[in-house]
Length: 293
Image (cartoon, rainbow, N blue to C red; front, side):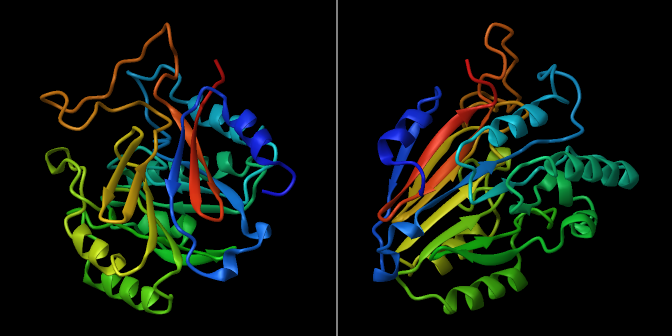
């Protein structure tokens, strides 16, 4: 990053968060310049509109997270929200009201390049109709400083599938990329079968992974499980982010999935966001809390 050296970054990163280095070899010489280094912020599972236990500050957590991101210096190149922007509701008018409020809240972010994708709470009840009205396509790709980003929609289908049409689009998009490209996939549900009993999987996610497998440098960032989690399928790394509403238990650690109880002695414990620094040969992941201790 320009304006901050590695020692300064490590000092900034030591805000009570974990630093996880993802070792990705740089494929092409086009990434040799330090100007290609950048960082972005990942937020996930804001569930705007949620009320009640286990988060007594459900209406305050997202504004606090926005303030924390706005306090970052330097500011990120861009910000991604990996789904469940709002909390589910059967009322279409209420769904649009929550999407409106969410859009108004994130307009307060200092960084104006914001990338969004839906979660099942935003899109599964109407196949993404309301989400598209507010934010446009549910899947897309873009490039940033030599990295190819792909946002996949594995939630608009209520069965939790990507679907044949989008898989064909993915294959066509990947076909334009050299095999040594740096590729980042952004999605909501995990693409691999983390714990299907809790809906922590994508029905046809293995087809997406198979399409990605020939590419040497692939990293997936997702949400949905409300906790930090790291996994590899062969050389492809998968990193789940914490939520901004309540933590969930570790996969299969309890008989029935239920939100982790609020701890008054450690408010906002398990909640937070992530900064991802793209360096020449790795991605450095830093987990940051909603509020500094």
